[in-house]
Image 1 (cartoon, rainbow, N blue to C red):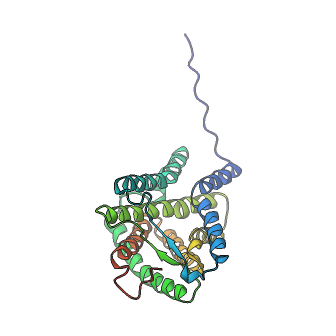
Image 2 (image 1 turned 90 degrees about the vertical axis):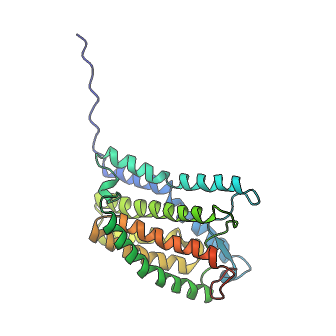
Length: 262
């Protein structure tokens, strides 16, 4: 009788391997975005135009003049942007848990929605005031949240983009990052600083206002995540903030005097 060899048990990852894993995930996602934002901001500082006269366009057209091809590209980039979340989910399964350990699930839909809406209302308004003030003072670029053509799919794509941003950032920078640095033995203040500074770093392309505003938002989100133990309310809050910004800009740009359009 032939004995079938059993698979060896998976060794528990060492602190060194967890650190390498964390750096790899960030290097494939928002850590790389932070480096890119720094390079972009350096370029903006060395332009002849002042920061307030430069424009940072989000959700720009991928194929100008070709709406169907543009739509395919938009959906492709939205899907591709979620792959780090899939990677995080896989790594957590290897740990014998899942994304549910971060509170990324639909188990508390109404509570998460209510909390998220309240956070969005509190942060969204103050964030707009900070942006308008820093842009007027010349510390921030003019941010154009939508550069999409006026076609039937513009609003749905902007909403999908808002949710993609929210899921990616909150799962990776909030839930996953805080879990890993805690496992690495970091203190809570150090973990909070790392998450908040990372969040601010990849918004630096917008200018100083984008950096400071998102660091503050990161601190608030970390404190709420620690209190609630769930990323889902923060995903909802982030998605609502971005949806209002993206869709609101698309509908109001050029129609109201207070909204900078570059």
